[in-house]
Image (tube, rainbow, N blue to C red; front, top):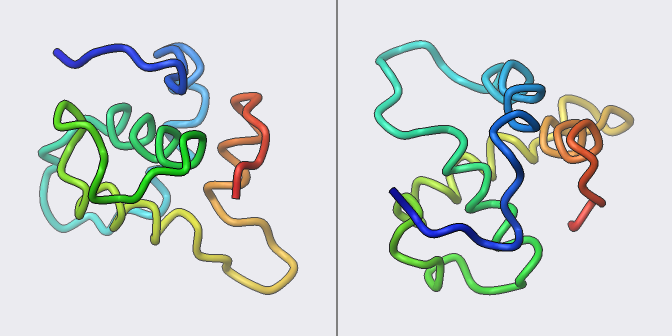
Length: 97
């Protein structure tokens, strides 16, 4: 169990974007981390402006969160929005990056 942060979204909001974020996943082994916690950690960094290494300890390790961020923010083409941009728009968050 981790603390709640002002940057968190609800589980219901997250369920509406889960499938979108899972598109970036390479299906090689089972996921060992809660994707909700990873996404909330990304939101925490985007909203607070903190450094990756300064993520609170109750989020997953910063290296893992950064890895997912890099996957989600990659654009398939110059004109197409990234998965992260699509997810932020769908859950009602302003684009923070």
